Image (cartoon, rainbow over all chains, first blue to last red; front, top):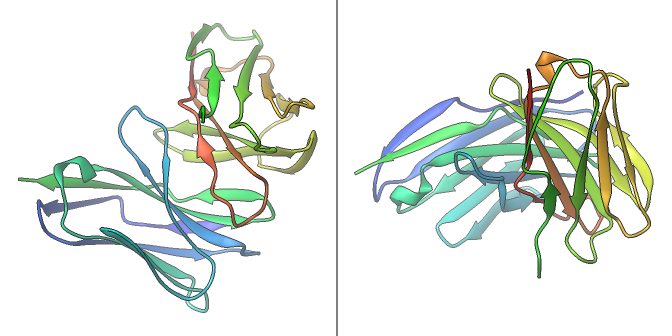
Length: 108
Length: 113
C-alpha cells in the first residue's frame, strides 16, 4: 500500500517563500505529482518528478529524493491567490495515491 | 480543447438507492480515473480505466463499480447508497502513460439523505 504524509497547514506572508514537504512509502513508484486545489474547485496539476533532483516551473519548484522517499514543493514570491490546498500524489501501477493535503494560507 | 466534463454537478439521493455518474475525458485521452473526496479521508482512488479495461482499483466495496466505453467516456455506479457515500466524486483523464499528469473535472457532489 501507500503511505503519504504532508503537514496539515502552513501560513506565510505575501512575497515570502514556503516549502511543503511530503514523505512517502510505496510498494512501487512511477513518479510523484503535486496538485493545487482551491476551495470548491478541482485539483490542477503543478509538477511531476520521477528522477532525483529539482524541477523548476516559474515560481514553483519541486524536488525528489527517491532513496529517502521525500519530496518538497517550493512556492516563491507568494501571492494571495496561492492560498489553497497542495496535494502530494504518488503514482504506482496506474494508481495515483494522494496525501491528505497541506492548506497554505497567504497573509498580507 | 474542452476539459474533463462530469455530469451531473449535484445529486441528492436517499439511502438504498443507486446512482450513476458520468465522465467525458479530454479529447484524445484514453485513461479515466475516479476518486472520492471527503473532508475526513481526502482524495481516495476508486478505479482507473484504459481502453475499456480496468487497470487498477482501490479499496472500496463492490457497491462501487465503473465502466468505460469505446469513445473513452466513463460511468461510475454506486448501488445501495449509504450515508457515508456522501462526497465529491472526481473524474480525471490522461493520455494513459504513468508519467503523464491527470486532469480533473469539476466533480459531482453527491448527498445522501
